[in-house]
Length: 162
Image (cartoon, rainbow, N blue to C red; front, side):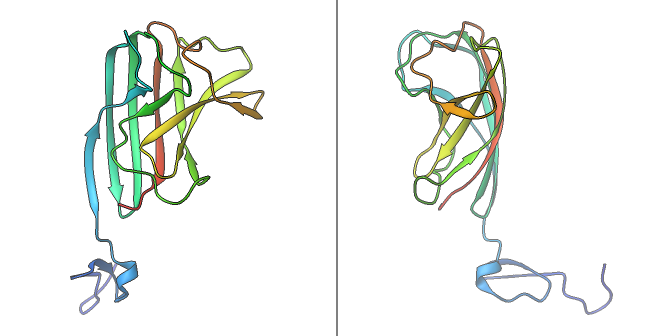
Protein backbone atom coordinates (compact mmCIF):
# COMPACT_ATOMS: atom_id res chain seq x y z
CA UNK A 1 0.00 0.00 0.00
CA UNK A 2 1.00 3.59 0.20
CA UNK A 3 -0.35 7.01 0.68
CA UNK A 4 0.25 10.40 -0.86
CA UNK A 5 3.91 11.08 -1.51
CA UNK A 6 5.02 7.42 -1.25
CA UNK A 7 7.29 6.33 -4.10
CA UNK A 8 6.30 2.87 -5.30
CA UNK A 9 8.74 2.71 -8.22
CA UNK A 10 10.91 4.85 -10.44
CA UNK A 11 12.39 4.43 -13.90
CA UNK A 12 15.74 5.93 -14.81
CA UNK A 13 18.64 5.13 -17.15
CA UNK A 14 19.46 1.98 -15.12
CA UNK A 15 15.94 0.51 -15.41
CA UNK A 16 13.04 0.00 -13.00
CA UNK A 17 13.73 0.50 -9.29
CA UNK A 18 11.22 -0.19 -6.54
CA UNK A 19 10.46 2.04 -3.56
CA UNK A 20 13.15 4.55 -2.75
CA UNK A 21 15.99 2.32 -4.02
CA UNK A 22 18.47 4.27 -6.18
CA UNK A 23 21.20 1.59 -6.61
CA UNK A 24 21.97 0.77 -10.25
CA UNK A 25 22.73 -2.85 -9.26
CA UNK A 26 19.13 -3.32 -8.05
CA UNK A 27 17.46 -2.02 -11.22
CA UNK A 28 15.33 -4.36 -13.30
CA UNK A 29 16.66 -3.71 -16.78
CA UNK A 30 15.34 -6.68 -18.75
CA UNK A 31 12.04 -8.52 -19.08
CA UNK A 32 11.14 -10.73 -22.03
CA UNK A 33 8.65 -13.45 -22.95
CA UNK A 34 8.88 -15.63 -26.01
CA UNK A 35 8.88 -19.06 -27.57
CA UNK A 36 11.58 -21.53 -28.51
CA UNK A 37 11.70 -24.88 -30.29
CA UNK A 38 13.26 -27.77 -28.35
CA UNK A 39 15.21 -30.26 -30.46
CA UNK A 40 17.20 -33.34 -29.51
CA UNK A 41 20.94 -33.13 -30.14
CA UNK A 42 23.40 -34.24 -31.31
CA UNK A 43 21.49 -34.47 -34.52
CA UNK A 44 21.19 -37.82 -36.17
CA UNK A 45 18.80 -39.09 -38.76
CA UNK A 46 15.16 -40.00 -38.93
CA UNK A 47 13.91 -38.14 -35.83
CA UNK A 48 10.34 -36.94 -36.42
CA UNK A 49 8.58 -34.62 -33.97
CA UNK A 50 4.82 -34.74 -33.54
CA UNK A 51 5.14 -31.75 -31.20
CA UNK A 52 8.12 -29.58 -30.26
CA UNK A 53 7.15 -26.38 -28.53
CA UNK A 54 8.44 -24.22 -25.72
CA UNK A 55 7.95 -20.88 -23.99
CA UNK A 56 10.21 -18.77 -21.80
CA UNK A 57 10.17 -15.79 -19.48
CA UNK A 58 13.38 -13.85 -18.78
CA UNK A 59 13.55 -11.45 -15.84
CA UNK A 60 16.95 -9.83 -15.48
CA UNK A 61 19.47 -12.67 -15.77
CA UNK A 62 17.03 -15.46 -14.78
CA UNK A 63 15.33 -17.52 -17.49
CA UNK A 64 12.48 -19.98 -16.95
CA UNK A 65 11.82 -22.31 -19.89
CA UNK A 66 8.92 -24.71 -20.36
CA UNK A 67 8.71 -27.26 -23.16
CA UNK A 68 6.96 -30.31 -24.55
CA UNK A 69 8.19 -32.64 -27.24
CA UNK A 70 6.66 -35.81 -28.63
CA UNK A 71 8.79 -37.99 -30.88
CA UNK A 72 6.66 -39.63 -33.53
CA UNK A 73 9.83 -41.47 -34.61
CA UNK A 74 12.90 -41.45 -32.36
CA UNK A 75 15.38 -41.91 -35.18
CA UNK A 76 19.06 -42.19 -34.30
CA UNK A 77 21.05 -39.67 -32.29
CA UNK A 78 24.62 -39.53 -31.06
CA UNK A 79 25.79 -40.00 -27.48
CA UNK A 80 25.14 -37.51 -24.66
CA UNK A 81 21.57 -36.79 -25.72
CA UNK A 82 20.46 -33.29 -24.86
CA UNK A 83 17.66 -30.86 -25.58
CA UNK A 84 18.93 -27.96 -27.63
CA UNK A 85 17.45 -24.67 -28.68
CA UNK A 86 17.32 -22.90 -25.31
CA UNK A 87 16.79 -19.19 -25.93
CA UNK A 88 19.81 -18.00 -23.89
CA UNK A 89 23.27 -19.29 -23.01
CA UNK A 90 23.71 -20.43 -19.42
CA UNK A 91 25.78 -18.10 -17.27
CA UNK A 92 28.54 -18.82 -14.82
CA UNK A 93 31.39 -21.25 -15.17
CA UNK A 94 31.21 -25.04 -15.29
CA UNK A 95 30.40 -27.03 -13.22
CA UNK A 96 27.66 -24.50 -12.41
CA UNK A 97 24.33 -25.91 -13.57
CA UNK A 98 20.62 -25.76 -12.87
CA UNK A 99 18.29 -28.72 -12.49
CA UNK A 100 14.73 -28.65 -13.76
CA UNK A 101 11.49 -30.53 -13.40
CA UNK A 102 10.81 -33.24 -15.97
CA UNK A 103 7.81 -35.31 -16.97
CA UNK A 104 8.10 -38.11 -19.48
CA UNK A 105 6.17 -41.04 -20.85
CA UNK A 106 6.83 -44.01 -23.09
CA UNK A 107 10.54 -44.20 -22.25
CA UNK A 108 12.49 -47.43 -21.95
CA UNK A 109 13.65 -47.07 -18.34
CA UNK A 110 13.87 -49.55 -15.48
CA UNK A 111 11.34 -49.24 -12.64
CA UNK A 112 13.98 -47.59 -10.43
CA UNK A 113 14.99 -44.97 -13.03
CA UNK A 114 13.64 -41.56 -13.95
CA UNK A 115 14.58 -38.92 -16.50
CA UNK A 116 16.04 -35.64 -15.35
CA UNK A 117 18.44 -33.12 -16.80
CA UNK A 118 20.90 -30.32 -16.18
CA UNK A 119 21.59 -27.01 -17.90
CA UNK A 120 25.36 -26.57 -17.83
CA UNK A 121 26.97 -23.14 -17.89
CA UNK A 122 28.17 -21.57 -21.14
CA UNK A 123 25.85 -23.47 -23.49
CA UNK A 124 22.24 -23.62 -24.70
CA UNK A 125 21.51 -27.27 -23.90
CA UNK A 126 19.76 -29.35 -21.27
CA UNK A 127 21.79 -32.53 -20.87
CA UNK A 128 19.44 -35.44 -20.29
CA UNK A 129 20.38 -37.62 -17.35
CA UNK A 130 18.89 -40.76 -15.82
CA UNK A 131 18.65 -41.04 -12.06
CA UNK A 132 18.83 -44.51 -10.53
CA UNK A 133 17.43 -45.34 -7.10
CA UNK A 134 17.10 -41.66 -6.18
CA UNK A 135 20.89 -41.38 -6.03
CA UNK A 136 23.20 -42.18 -8.93
CA UNK A 137 23.03 -40.11 -12.12
CA UNK A 138 24.33 -41.21 -15.47
CA UNK A 139 24.22 -39.81 -18.96
CA UNK A 140 22.50 -42.22 -21.34
CA UNK A 141 24.55 -43.43 -24.28
CA UNK A 142 22.56 -42.97 -27.46
CA UNK A 143 18.79 -43.21 -27.73
CA UNK A 144 18.19 -46.64 -26.20
CA UNK A 145 16.00 -45.03 -23.53
CA UNK A 146 13.72 -43.41 -26.14
CA UNK A 147 10.89 -45.03 -28.09
CA UNK A 148 8.71 -43.94 -30.95
CA UNK A 149 6.04 -41.73 -29.37
CA UNK A 150 8.21 -40.86 -26.35
CA UNK A 151 7.17 -37.62 -24.68
CA UNK A 152 9.49 -35.32 -22.72
CA UNK A 153 8.26 -32.14 -21.14
CA UNK A 154 9.38 -29.97 -18.29
CA UNK A 155 10.51 -26.70 -16.88
CA UNK A 156 13.96 -25.37 -16.02
CA UNK A 157 15.13 -22.12 -14.51
CA UNK A 158 18.71 -21.05 -15.09
CA UNK A 159 20.96 -18.01 -14.91
CA UNK A 160 22.37 -16.32 -17.99
CA UNK A 161 24.91 -13.59 -18.61
CA UNK A 162 22.78 -12.10 -21.40
